Length: 157
Image (cartoon, rainbow, N blue to C red; front, side, top):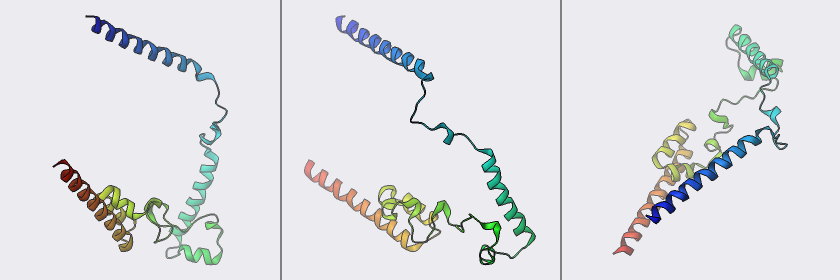
């Protein structure tokens, strides 16, 4: 009977401590945090509208003049493409040799195995070199897995 009372008392004390911490933290919400710059989190609608207007003007120009490319506008020095980048690669990958999301393809295959190989293939638009690196990563991961379990089972017996 004594153990039941001690355990019950411990649980009650734990909940009391949790409640006291929660109420004391909720009372401190009004204290400003000097390290957080809240202006970064506020949406600047005028800057967003200005950027979208530039894109809308470019879209209207390209719709009206079919056959005009970005390279044509760039060579003519058009003001429609000032501060714009000619990056059509997915997820911000600028060059064909850059791994997806900046993570080496070998690690994609090693950590995520077959799913990683498929992700590398899709994200790099079928780049065979990057897919091959991911496949090697998957094979190394499988080899380590087999060696580990063979070692564990041989040690157990």
